[in-house]
Length: 391
Image (tube, rainbow, N blue to C red; front, top):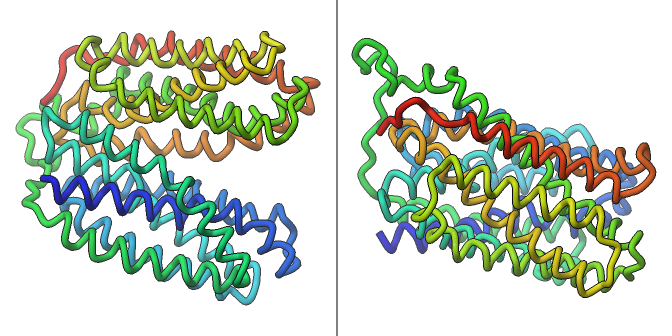
């Protein structure tokens, strides 16, 4: 089992780094080199996120039937092809098509399939394994942001992306083939379930508890993702310099890592219902503190660290929400249905937060609105409990 965990840790860092975290460093150079408008350049990345959300629903079904080895290896190969294609794109339409394919790839190589593999193979030990993968995966930006900057210092953006595509191919393809080579028992299809028992994934997906879980997690995810993007301009309104704001954001990352270390203990001591509501309430409280506490800087940095902690455990809450309530049999399919609106709201959050700041007259009011959203999500999550748990 150590082979599985090591492989997923390494491939998550590499996949996130190449397919996600390299882009913010590349984007200005892409725009200046091609003459494409910055909004159009960023639109490609947003398109990939939205595509990933939709493709994840289909990928989840394939995961349940065929397992992560085929899905993640195929996703890696597609990611390599699409990244090279994007780097060589002669026109904006081709560039956008390649980002669409990257979105399909990320649905098959990032956290969703990794979580499915761990949930099925690690059983009762899954929380610690999930914690390990998300801790290591959280280093993707730390590793690949400076690596991308170093490549750009010596190469143009096209050659830099080709180098990163080669790294993606050399690391993820063989590790997915080698590291995920374990037996996989397909989840039963609906026709295999006698009489449409509660194990029927379609019935679960239509249940009030599942719908409320999707709504609560989507609202909470929107608030959590918007806070990350909106925190730097908020700090600027509070009088921080860009450098100090960056340090505050970095402390949020420290809080994110530290909180994940304690998630296994939290999971052992709480029910899914109270854990979900508590984490969403923590996100609401830390977001509200941003809205109402003007300073000093040290206090704002402390709040940033607390907000990062809430964000860190939210990722693990997402990873375990399905299994805690309905078991692991249909994890891929149900997780895809849960993840799709979460990814969608995460993609929209930066745009909406920025637009709201202009309409409402500043970021403190935006953070107050986000706190209300997260608080509402906490209340809604109390209804996200099935009448009986399915294993």
